[in-house]
Each structure stands twice: as structure tokens, then as C-alpha cells.
Image 1 (cartoon, helix red, strand yellow):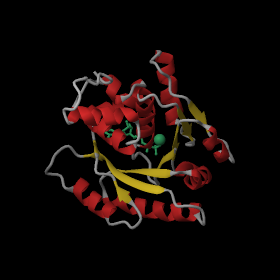
Image 2 (cartoon, rainbow, N blue to C red):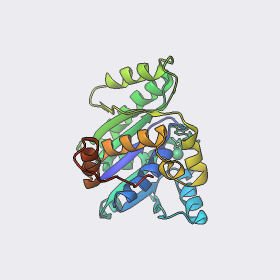
Image 3 (cartoon, rainbow, N blue to C red):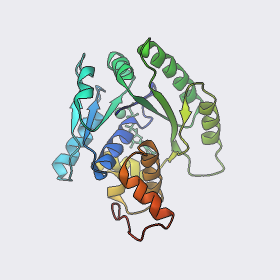
Image 4 (cartoon, rainbow, N blue to C red):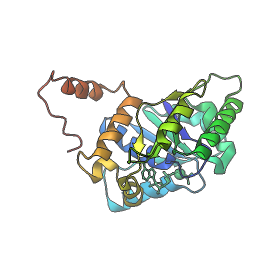
Amino acid sequence: MITVVANLKGGSGKSTVVFNLGLWLQTRGQPVAAYDLDPQQTLSDVAEVRREEGYAPPLQVYTGQMGMMDQLRIHPGQVLVDVGAANMDAMKQALAAADRIVIPVPPSQPDVWATQRFLHIVQEAVADGPMPQLLTFVNRADTHHAVRESDETEQALDAMPGVTLLPHRLHSRTIYRRSLSEGQAVFELSGRSKAVEEFITFAEYLYPELPQNRKRENLKQGKVNEIDTAYS
Ligand SMILES: Nc1ncnc2c1ncn2[C@@H]1O[C@H](COP(=O)(O)OP(=O)(O)OP(=O)(O)O)[C@@H](O)[C@H]1O
Ligand SMILES: [Mg+2]
């Protein structure tokens, strides 16, 4: 499956999500090919840090060439694509090739506006082809309940036609910043913290077909005695 993580505004968490999802998928036994189509090459840089530090397994990151979208289907496992507005041609090609587009949205009105514009770009890019699944979620949500911006942003996203709002937010937590700077996934940096729990819940929601997820679901329902130690 080709999952493109994209949106128009910078800094919404695209590279962070691709990096962490890629490593998480590998813990679930999935082969992963990650594509970095952003000229900033944050994803390539963080994968390089990981390699230099010797953390295993590495994340295989390809940097994209024009006209390379046909290549995306050759990978046997999961394909993740990190692309932003800095390379609009690559973004449109990736959007047209996607099975689904995951759109991180920070909780603010300008980010909601930018997401609306981004959806127009998706429509143009896909043109007459099949429309990929469009999934939005709030990233960098405030951890204080009194702050209403995440709720308001979710309401606005939920009202957008043809788009599914994921029922899981990622909150603003320093561990995500550490993840990018240190080359490790959040679940490698910490045990079962709130941040790790929320990331795993988010990832499992995105990939419900993975067999280990069913085991975890059974565990929650008390059907098995086994302890899932993947993140301890
Ligand atoms: N949930 C989060 N909590 C805290 N910090 C976050 C979170 N998600 C991302 N960040 C941080 O925000 C910054 C921007 O994230 P990231 O580089 O992933 O965004 P991006 O959308 O790829 O940006 P760009 O458009 O520049 O490529 C990084 O320092 C990252 O660590
Ligand atoms: Mg980025």
C-alpha cells in the first residue's frame, strides 16, 4: 500500500510521522520503502543519523526523481512517501500515485485553510484517476484540555467533504522532537509512556490488517495471557 503523508504548510509533522510509522511497521514485520521527495531531505537526514548511530533496523529511504512514481508499486511491503509544497511537481505525482493520503494538521485556523487548499490540489492532481482515501488528523495538539483549538480544528476537518478525520490525535510532546534529532522512533526512546501509547494507537488504526494488531486486541479483551513485549 502506498501511503503519502503530505500537506501544504510546512512543519506539520510529515517527516516525523513517516519516520516513526516506517520504524513501527518494521517492528510489525513489514518491509518498508520510504520516499523522501522534499528538497530539505529531513527524512533522509534522520535515517542517516540512525544509520550512523548504529540503531537497528535502518530505515530504507529513497530520494525521488521526476517520473519515478511508477517505481512505487514495485515494493513488496509498505510504501511511505514524505512530500511537501517545496516540490509541487513531485507532490502532484505522489498524490496521483497514492492509495491513501494522510494529512497531519496542526491545530490552527491557518492550517485548516491550508488543508482546504491542499484538498483542491489533490483533486487537480488525481484528475480522472481513482481518488485515494483522504485521512486527516490533528498533530501537535495541545496537552492542556482547556485549549480548544484542537477541538475546533477537528470540527473543521470533520466537516470537509470526502475526507475522513482519524479519531486519534498526536499531542505536542518533546519526544517527537527528540525522535527526529536522535534518529530513533518514539517507542524506542521511551517505554509505555502516554506519547508511545498514543503513537501506537494511531499506527494500529492506520494499519488494522496487520496480524499482530489482532493479538493486541485480544490482549485488551483478556483473551490471551501473552504479554506483547514489542515496546517494553
Ligand atoms: N506531535 C509533535 N509534538 C512535538 N513536536 C513535533 C510533533 N510533530 C512534529 N514535531 C516537531 O515539529 C518539527 C516539524 O516536524 P516535521 O519536520 O516532521 O514537519 P514537516 O511537516 O516534515 O516539516 P517540513 O514541511 O519542513 O518538511 C520538528 O522539530 C518535529 O520534531
Ligand atoms: Mg519534512
